Length: 308
Image 1 (tube, rainbow, N blue to C red):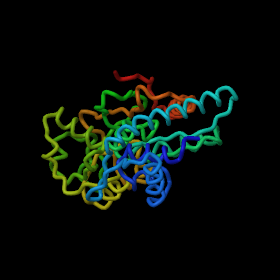
Image 2: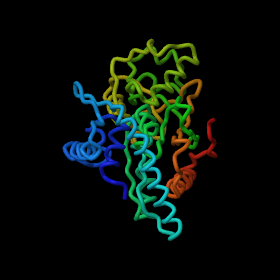
Image 3: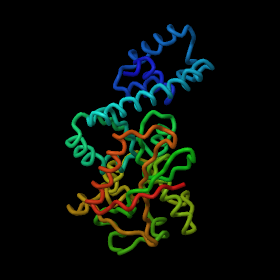
Image 4: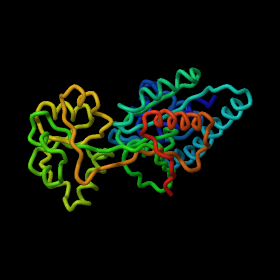
């Protein structure tokens, strides 16, 4: 077992937030602070500077962070080696998923995974694409699954799931009468936008540029932080939006929302994101295989292809 103080320090150093580290480790902030204080007392040095409610690593903290990353990684390798010898699947898998994937695709997949491997603990954090990529880069989580492009060249990015973004409107909205929605149609109506940092928003912005429009030309009076909130706003007649087709099956079936494809179409991919150099555990390999099989059964998983 990795020393608790080292595990806590490794997490805090990755996110630079005692509160966020507490959420990831399921610990209270006072408990996080206590573990950091114990480690600082043992090493007889300050590891974090605390100013204006923000923290940063001291020079000593940066040095400890280098060793902490190696210690945590070596512990994972040791546990995996022993489990491989004994044929036992135990341990912890830490995942981060962007909002669409975390809310609509992973619950069923992880439920089935836990039924097959009941001794495996799965910890999932749902955030926007930028936040998930940052957690992977900082070694806070083992694997990210995101819906936006990843610019960090130090990370391994693998394409898996195909998706399509479509326009959603209330049944009585004028665009509901169209078979396809063209870019100029969007400029005539209030547009409900996702927050900055959302993978969906970045994909829409690039699509608009590809057809000669700038995102700023949208009449976007409302920005919301989740697809559920956007669907509710569209149903309430506050405007139109663009969301993943995978998120609106129930509403389309019930007739509370209408979905119309864009012209030109707006396909996109979802991606697995992980560290290039990080030890790849047997548990993570199992989760990869299980995820692909699960998605293939839904007809959505394409052949995995690593993006160099």
